[in-house]
Length: 115
Image 1 (cartoon, rainbow, N blue to C red):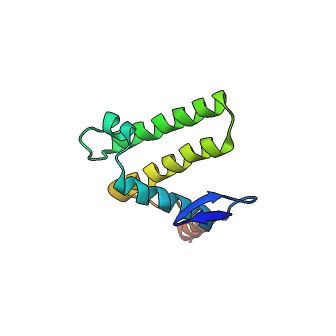
Image 2 (cartoon, rainbow, N blue to C red):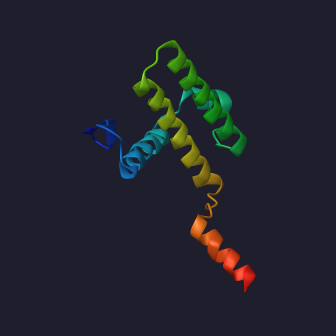
C-alpha cells in the first residue's frame, strides 16, 4: 500500500476496513474543498438535498459502469466507488444515519417478546 498524505493510492491484496474508511474519509475531505461539476449540475443550490445526493450517487454509478465497460480498469472504477461512498457519507451526515440492527440485537429483541 502506498500513501500520499491522507490518500491511499494502492492496496496490496484486500484492504482492511480501516484502509477503506481512510479512503472514504479522504474523499469527504476532498469534497469539502472542491465543487464537482456533477454537483453543480444536479444540485445548483449547493444544499445537498436528499434527492440531489441520490441523483449524484446514480450519476457516479453510471459513470463507473461506463468506464468499466469501455476500458475495464479496476482502479478507475474504484475511484468512482470511492466518490459514491463519500457522497453517501455526506448524505447521512446531513440527513441522518439510522443504524442497522445486527443479528444479535434481533435475537435479543425476539427474546424480550417471548418472555
